[in-house]
Length: 81
Image (cartoon, rainbow, N blue to C red; front, top):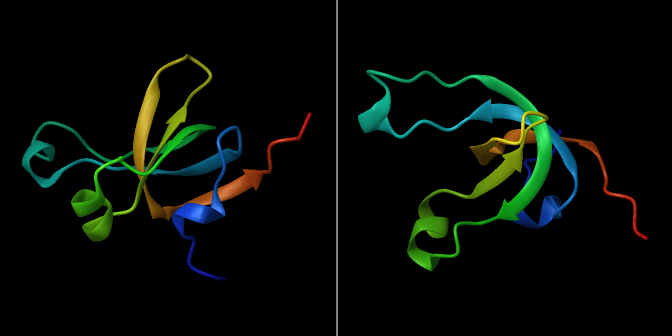
């Protein structure tokens, strides 16, 4: 399996993975599995993206989850219209 990169995912792709929980929140929150549609790739901040490559996915209940690209896999590529 190849390691995903931010360019591995596009807005609208269906993905599955594990949510990212920052270390300072892990006492109250646990990573959990999710499946959803990519709504953002990368944080938009160069220094943050250099250390951790993130994406955000919208779930069926319309909430969003943050995940590390490296802990996310493509389920289905968005259909081009």
